[in-house]
Amino acid sequence: MYQSYYGFTEMPFHITPDPKFLYLSNTHQEALQHLKYGVHEKKGFIVLIGEVGCGKTTLCRKFLSELDPAHYDTALVLNPRVTETQMLKAILTELGEPNLARSKNDLVAQMNQVLLDRIAKGREIVLIIDEAQNLSFEVFEQVRLLSNLETDKQKLLQIVLMGQTELKDRLAAEELRQLRQRILVHYELRPFTRDEMDRYISHRLTVSGSMGRPHFTSWALRRLYKSSRGIPRIINNLCDKSLLSAFIRESDEVNYWDARRAARDLERLTD
View 1 (spheres, rainbow, N blue to C red):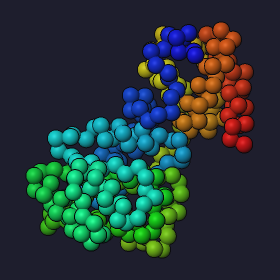
View 2: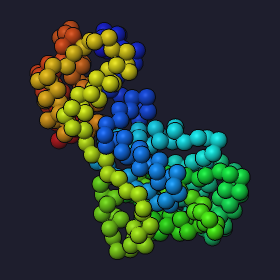
View 3: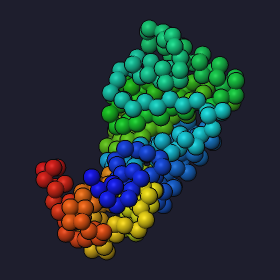
């Protein structure tokens, strides 16, 4: 509704993980560098943890877009609520393998051969598992065993586990002590600071084609930060509702009352 009124080329506060809208705060920049370092240095296991809505998936897509497709093959698993066999099939399917073995043992053998063939051709293989806190202990163990696949000189597979803060508790379990010992790169995303949130909102408005309108007042921004706690997804929801409120008033200024109304609407939805 408000897109044409404010002259946006597209909606500024969609919650879809579009890398174009990625704002690299200090914590996101550090997280991206940890991912790059872990993969380029072949560290084997890399863990990225963050609160719900902190931008892990968007950051992941940014990371994937910066891997050279001429050198890297990637597999992204988005649904980790699977059995060991289903996980193996999902990885091979993501890698573009058309004919899959049936049994778990045969799938592991096929995986090993596929990885060896690709390494021999100069490829690097990166597996990313999103929402990894939902993996069963059995699938965690299967993933750990995949990390055993190696030549005399290198691991065949670089594995990135991404998940919510519950992933820390899962990895702390006694059953996963062997996997935990193999995690050489670990980073936890932090929410935005107040200054970062202000720059984030300005960035998204600019990317969407804003020519200076609408304007968020300092009191509106203060209310948005209090309600969002610096979490990008919540900021997006609140800004979208605040813009709608300002549009209804036919105003070029998003004020405190617009932000307060947006916060109360969101609270009613989440109660």
